[in-house]
Length: 445
Image (cartoon, rainbow, N blue to C red; front, side):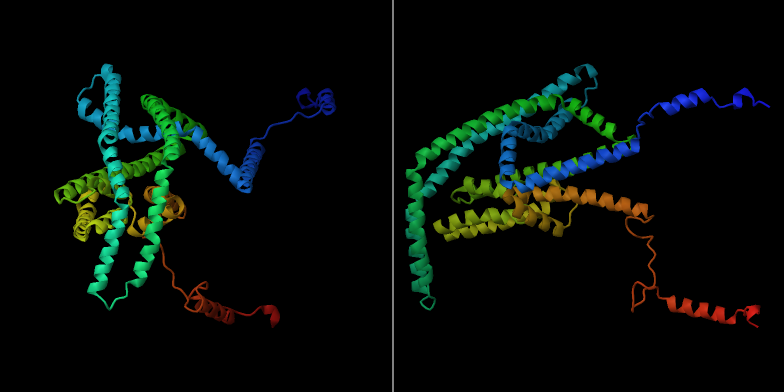
């Protein structure tokens, strides 16, 4: 009896397949595992080489940053000018809906923004910097007379209050001030090579800044293309839902960081101008120099106004204690005005951080990056806190818990052992009663 043809196994094909070697079949799962393993090994090797050769790595990183400095400065310029361009475009061309002139409107807004920024820089270089240099030179020239003023003040205090021993203070100043004056004189004698080296670095910086402005113009003009390219990369690596979440998170981080940086810069500029005007009205000396220091240090939250007030207070205290007292009262009033009226009006709740987080950011940023770290620590911490809140909210969502923990069930805790339920002994007793009352096995009778 023969089997049907469709049930018969092709012996010839099976023998041919057995004779051939099996082809390699790709497996996406194992390929992904190998890719992740190679990437992890490469990253760990780079980190090890970076830490093992720390000094060489620092030099290499510094050389890379110096090479890329025009592009980094251009990115910062474009980042700070972008809100000004958008504001000018809304103020001047928001009513025009004609798409034919959209590119012209963008070009005019960009041109006007760069004219404003370059004009402000030219104004500072023309009027502000010469007065600052003149004030510093006056302080250097008056260094010898300042020594006599301090010593006369201490001698008068010693005559008024003979019970207080000023000998230690006078001896310390006698030893410190002449050394400071001699060091200043040494610097003044070696100022020619210093000016030469500074001139070379200034020329290189000027070239880099001019190049950065040119690059920033190209960045601003091709802003839409750059953003579109970044979106393409994100959508290429993630699915549509995840990519949209990533883009939205990046936008929020940019909003938090940029709103704080730009708002704080505007707030500090206004505080510096108000300080300069009030010091001129009150006829306090070195008004421009002290106001610039106050305005720059005001970028640091909470402690900035007081840090900026210390140099001005010392200078005015040496010249006239009365002017120093007036300046101290002025700084206290400015700090109250900035903290209660001007700061909340401009910044609002841009960071969303509590005061303890701000103090933490200032402390850690100052320890790692100095003054710049104290300023940038607050927005960076705000961005990190925002990201961590989203991560924790997602982890709570996976456990079916709300972000405010209102649906958390609080169990009864055993005070003797928190890991054992409180009703464990009751459950044990009830189970023992059930077993004792249950009928015995008939085989035991």
